[in-house]
Amino acid sequence: MEGFGHYSYEITKRLCESHTEHEFVLFFDREVDSSLNFPLNVKTVVLFPPTRHPLLWILWFDFSLPLALRKYKIDLFWSPDGFCSLLSSIPQIITIHDINFEHYPKDIPWIARIYFQYFFPKFASKAKHILTVSNYSKNDISNTYSISKQKISVVYNAPNNLYKPISEEEKLAIKKEFTFNSNYFLFVGSIHPRKNIQRLIEGFALAQKDIKDLKLVIVGSAMWKDKFISIPKEIENDVIFLGHLPLEKLTKITASAFSLTYVPYFEGFGIPLVEAMKCGVPILTANTTCLPEVAGNSAIYCDPFDTNSIARGMVELFKNKELRLELASNGLKKSEKYHWDLSTEKIWGILKNSF
Image (cartoon, rainbow, N blue to C red; front, side, top):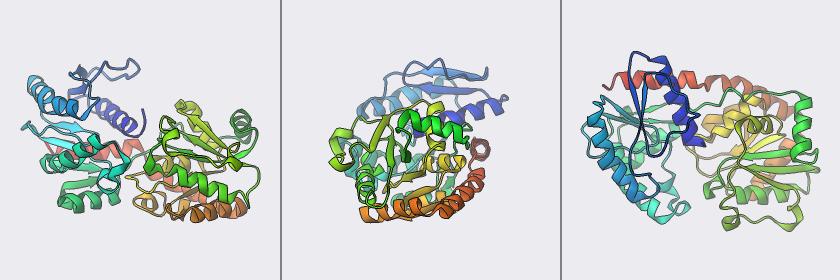
């Protein structure tokens, strides 16, 4: 699981465990993973077809799902990833994390773009209420789709509890394992155009003139790397792609970083920010969309479209130990407001008033 998957699981699990007075029916489009342990008040149902294509999304949400909602006598349907059924009369709450596809449509395949741009305004209109993950996204959804802000509630994402500061001995072991004992800047996220990894790499190359013995570690699926990422020859030994990592290892990688360098040009929330904050790791991030809202005084900021600005941020963090310590301390304090239990409680309040 990545961003949407973690959000769906963390909230759903807590809702079901905290409200055993209700029966929850969880609809899947494929066999349910045995590692997903839900309490006894949960029924899991697999609906056909597996949603691997926009045409299959239409079949699932407007044919299979409405039939299942009636069959299981559902009172309220919550969709944690923005989709809903346009053909069901049952009240529906949806979570729209962001609408990047409206602003940077070329970042996604054309057929998915057509689907999103056609259907998401309809989903936003159809839903009884909309949840989103930042005030930036709330305003963006409201302005783009002409939706009243009264219909949209902000509930922040949160880090896993495994994210926390670790000892210097543990940090040394991680650096020995992954970076040849070097300190490193860290990026965590999907390898996707909007994550701006190419400019991050170019900024790192520029910063190398003033930075010594630091690597750039990139964690995330590398399936698109060859399509839109190139690494200058002079730093090819200093950029390390680790691919997808299990959570236990990812938390250690994050906590051992010299700094998180997370500079996407569009985000709805940016959960790696709060993961780094929870670990006491200073942050360089972009000055766009929701990122200043989420990171606040635990980060310094750069222009994500300017590689010189990215490089200056890296150099500033490298040279200023006092700044790094201040950002790390601020992050630990600010991270306390991001907790899945708090988010679940707020979402439950919205759901129970929507029956």
